[in-house]
Length: 141
Image (cartoon, rainbow, N blue to C red):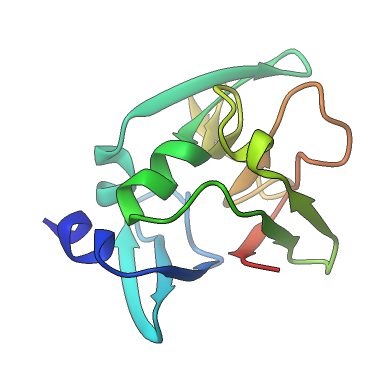
């Protein structure tokens, strides 16, 4: 439903709210597309293909970045800038965006992310510096 509308619009930025991943499903993801804000609830995120990756002896659950971008109709051949709540940011090359193990995680080891990691976390195993805790924004640089 919501994806068909978003597929026709270019992705400008994804802004993640601080309540995502909290118990009770109160969280949502705000998506800013072509100047129009849209909110994806946890139910809508969970409706996307679920993926799991192992990282530092833990199993993270979430949505592959490439699946999220495909659902939003965004071009994965352009880099994105991932920003954490503390201001730390990393550029994500198209090669990273297309990886099987590049994940927007909302759970770890069968439960929600702990406060020290989430509510959302970017997980890219084997790529130091690309796994960001407290992910708050994905945007074109």
